[in-house]
Image 1 (tube, helix red, strand yellow):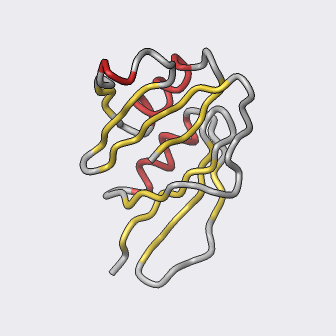
Image 2: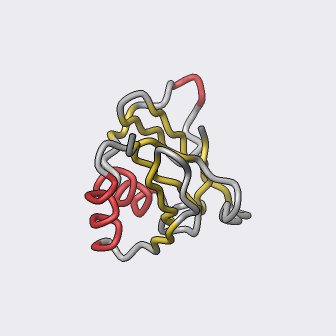
Length: 113
């Protein structure tokens, strides 16, 4: 999956996706060139960040991740000053929306059943 960030904001993206959400940065294949952004992994999830000069946050479309400890991630996001919104309940899941430092909406879900 890919999320777009503003051009030149890779450091802030790393601080959020690595330090707050717990992703590990991975090396992008050389064949793709140095186009900004970055690649990250957390378990089976691989996240690609693309950088764009004409950036517009994804405030409606969003990725969703099933996480093992939603309360811990919510606390870490709140400590980092991120906006957290409750999400409409779904059977078998507790879930929230969090916004990255650039306004992109992300959904975090934990199984309850």
